[in-house]
Image (cartoon, rainbow, N blue to C red; front, side, top):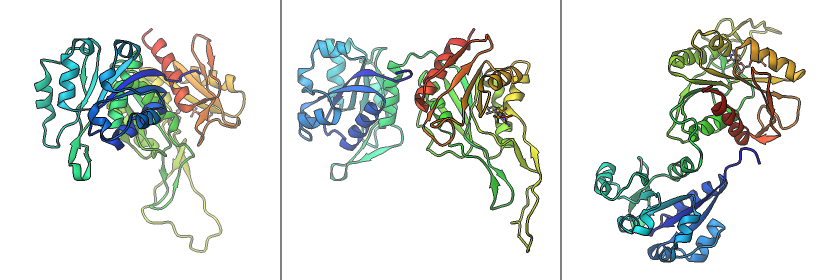
Length: 384
Ligand code: CTP
């Protein structure tokens, strides 16, 4: 199906396999469409049997000692996580295994310094190998002590970077995501039903293709994706989103404006909570907020612009008008009346319109899959 990831991974696990950690990695990898074949070392098998690893991965499993040339060749990405120092040496000194590129996540003691580990392996590491060093996270194995290891998310992103063509490598992308909040008084505000899921999916899809993403976002339904290429910047109101976007724009090559920005904001913010004081009604005066997308479209040196439009009628007519009036390079439109489309659902049916008169009608897809398709068009069109 359009936009779905896939890939064959070979995973060597070494003992004491940080079980929860490895299981979480397997879950993430499978969820992201990877087929993982596990090769546990003898020490990993002291903790979990071959059958257990086969069940966790959903694939046949063999001992590391029986790893063959065929297995090495069949894999598109090879990961050793966790890897003891002994396993690292074994993989890197053996001609048969060292010929293939490896992602290596050494299991370190909390006091080990990652730079020193990197240095100690420098002589063995060829250009095609990557050492995945731990961040601040330390796994607590209870009676077995503590271990520092690259997180499951870190390992997954490193693996996906090997599988996904890096067609946006180094491209500076700015995204606006989620709703904005327009405060009325200290307790009340105006907002909308956006969850930020479409924008978050786009941030991740672009980051996974190598883009350096600045994500300017309102309040989100899900946590921000843990990807080293995503820099989140939280804002609240439409004005704050506008200011943050304009401050970043000179460094931006591609801007994707996905946020559901409030079009109107209260004329004045009341510092103290508004009391009803026996009134039967009240009048709230609103004024227009700045249109971020339109402002970027008017810039002399504007970035490649991707806009969104949620329409309830005359989709193509309205979308083409927005494409032109806001000077977009791609306009992604959806019909909000269609079930499964738009706000607060996990799917969307988007049609992309382009200035050359072309369009691409996507089928009903998950927002992650739709984001993949949009990024494919960006990669195809932005440099032209
Ligand atoms: N947008 C923006 N700043 C605003 C309003 C909208 O950047 N203040 C962006 C959105 O992020 C989206 C596109 O503009 O990319 C939506 O355009 P808009 O004309 O606001 O769409 P609608 O809200 O559907 O407008 P209308 O009500 O006029 O149809």
